[in-house]
Image 1 (cartoon, rainbow, N blue to C red):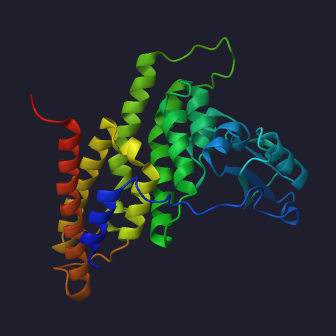
Image 2: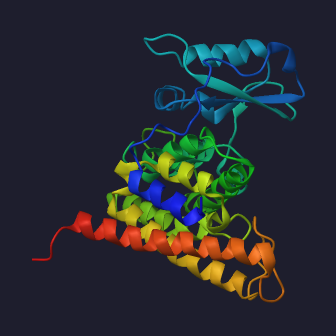
Image 3: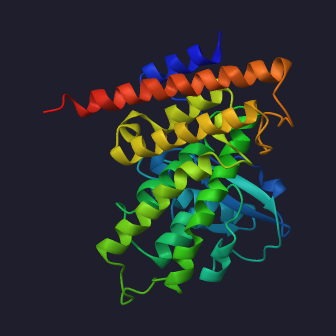
Length: 309
């Protein structure tokens, strides 16, 4: 099946199929034997309930089995043990501590983690559940981390996670301190709105960064991206604008690669001249994918807007 047809089906049916994320077992992923003073253990929520109930615990790391299991147990709601996995990484650890202990530590977001949103941005500029940090960034970071994708899609997720968080570092830097005290000044509604505007404006560029561009992902991974975002969010004006911008960038990136004008690094090998053979055919199919997506997306947007008065 041609890629363009595959993506056509995805766009036409988005939100109607089963969720992409594979079922996860409850509880910790790693054994107690794996934990010692040379490891740091972070909690990874496996559903929306755990993301909210384990938010504080997910911004800290522990060092040993007892502390890790106690943190998981503390996240439990009325239904029992929270659906959380443990991410065990190499690193010196003598006592449980915040992943981001100071604003300065936020300058370099930790790879493949979502703690930046609650542990850095929200602590520096607390805008609440409706703000970008908790209401969008933390929510979709966790959703993408647990989504099911192939190797190229997983590499894309890691690249985008880091890119989006780095784009927000200047906001944390400008705040200068964490607003943990009840007496600390709170950001205004205008500031919270501006944070969201800045963050959303960075999305298309991060999605299509030459190091990890969505434009060259396999159709199955693009389908997983759309499913993870979900129809309710895709219907939002802010997201429609990002999708349209992303499609435009992809059309340009593929055209430049097809004609040998772009040596960007991504999942398709760059060419020095006109693409040839299998590579050219692959690029032409990708061009059809995004051209078809553009047409369908414009149609969907027009339909959502309704008839012109």
